[in-house]
Length: 538
Picture 1 (cartoon, rainbow, N blue to C red):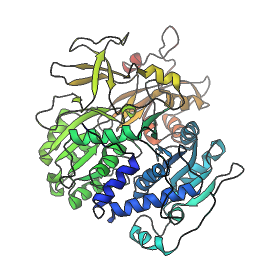
Picture 2 (spheres, one colour):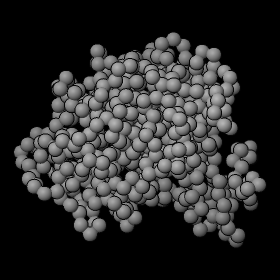
Picture 3 (spheres, helix red, strand yellow):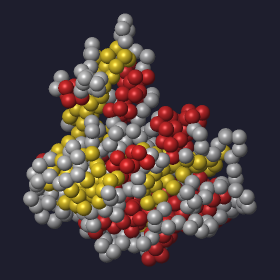
């Protein structure tokens, strides 16, 4: 393919120039055109530059799905910064780790999440400015009023507003929009890092995947081409997946900008709200995880919600059961295809073809300009014969540049131009790929990646816990759920509810063990490693 040689802010500028009046975002009935979106992006970029943001600085975003996320994402990039998107479900412990590792100097966050951020302040090393979105009079229903009042007055600033003595300055999002209409040139080029997207990676240690403007622009075009999304017809997408996750970030937000599509924003996936959105706006494309499609299939009177508008749907994050796909396709008359990708690949690498019959349990074919091989699990040096299992490795223009400040971790996964995924897979005679096992011990619950190690580290902090090991177990709704095996210290007692409450205070809710089993011991190997395979057989 021929890809646009643009940065992400330039991509938005081009779309706004072509389709200024076309609706870019819909949120609680408020519509934002591409011209308005670009205006707000430029205003925020100017505001960020006024508080000292310069090229290469890291700006963290922490908010649920909302127009401010889109504005902040492109605004930070337009100012020259690198974005690090943060889960709105993270605890103060988790955000402190990510923002310290990224060296974030500015945080843009939903004001309702400020108590979590405030609790993390003593641990934050580099944050100098916190920008809070959502003034009560504007959030979430009165965005149009904000648009009309922005030009009423501007805040003039000649010198950058800088924090002193290590205490962050608190700003209102709307105030930054009033500082100036036009940001200074940032000097961005396609090869610059756009995003530090954090992932557990193959070892379970949290790392920031360095994704460039080229990585993200190209992957959005690859996905659009493969799924036949085009600006030649009006596409309407739904942001039901969290935009801080790479799946929605690229395949919904960036992909929509590249084809002048409309995105209907849901703060989070809630079945009744999603059904009403589909009935009211008749979207043409839906991106989700299997649990969402299970919910649609089982909704009462679902046929009255107008699913026939959905021409194409994509599922990722976990294996799609064949019966769920078949039932959903019968409901919509459209296609539901399963894909595969990683944070390290921006994320899409494989998707089942949107035409013809998909192969059951397959992740599909490598998308345009993407190479994939199955290599020997031990050496990683040679391809294995068709049908045999091995590690899937990937090469393409969407592959990351490496892990932020982690050269040794980078060298483990990027070798001779190939990304070693750690996923065990096989390939059939028609070129279709199948994932046999996932990255070492990773749990995928409701589309979220959970690494046993990060849950175990919290469990070990509990004063009553002597040992703990975590595995994923099948769950009819979430795909998998977290199960913890706990050995208590001598002479103490505890209930599963106590252990869960301890975890809930220290990690996102989706990581908290849904099952807790107390044991006298945990099976280990000769070198002391937990034998998770044996735990799965208990």
